[in-house]
Image (cartoon, rainbow, N blue to C red; front, side):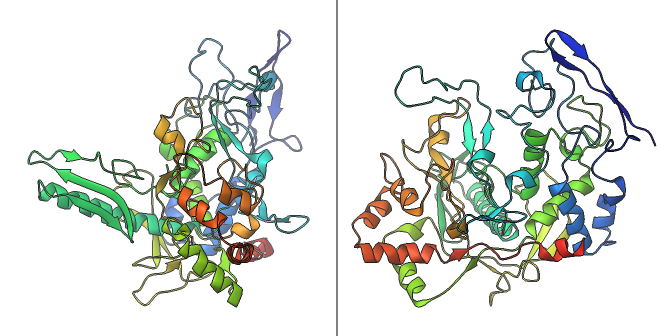
Length: 479
């Protein structure tokens, strides 16, 4: 079958329209249609988990091109104010017709930004599902970037977000914890509505998100809610805690970074929202395979020793564990999968499920029928102070200052640290927690006054939180 696509490049006042033919060597989609699986195959139980993971790995690692639907459509100069990952029409750097970099269109696949399994080794240990160095940080929605330092104050002012990519290991356990927390918070919300005038404390898995109270007319007062949106949905993914599931995150990331639009979120399989001539760029089955692949990655490990135990206790004693909760425990072992939408009902309308206590995830089962998820986070947003605050024009002051508690599992291998990678060492990251308005100032100050020996015990404990070894080796060996 022959695919013909016309792409216009505008530069130096000339329009050049090369005709690309899929039957020429190297032309055509990089993702072989025969390797794609359907939603019906997944939901109907026709495929093994490993087959689904293999299909997801392909979506994760294939360097997509124009035939796959990479990028936005031809830039429409008649619509100067209509350009976004949703509608397409983003400009490209110097009119190159492909990449932009400062508002997405900055990679061809997920793998480009998720390859560093350990920065503790020299050279770095690379692998599928890791994090990224500073050069892979996303430059999210800036309008102004003062690279020449007009005020000559050492500040290159920037009104977007700079987001250093995190590793993806353990995502299944994180999502399951978040869903169970959401389920409990929604039940507390309903209790408040059923009992007008009663102040209801929003406690789930030993984490408090403030209080709510309803009146007799069914109006809910959420003014005392903290660390979560007013809809009481836990969103574990994203530095700001803005995605309830890996699937949600994938939809946004694919559109932003690659211009690859998921059919279920962009009008269906026949829609072409970014006007690039390609429909069904990421099918429902593709998206399911990708989210299942990511949520079945191995999880980080903790290498225990006597020094490790001493440091762990000190870590808790000085207050770090108030936010960096060592263990979250779930009530169930299976992670169910559902399409995007209705995150307030996290366990309804599901089409597939995976037992996270089995391989390759191997989360430790608990006596109550759940699993332990030792991620060292409370999945709550906290004010990190004015010195760590972002300056994104599209966020308010509180949103710029708040970040979801970083998960510390794997921290030994994942420098640089903090949301934008500004901390090159663990000590730098700890000390930067102490700044005006930061909720973590007290814990950081407690660390400062410890003896050097005590500080090293904590650092040795943190250095015991390692990334998984040889991730995805079962799939790589199979291909």
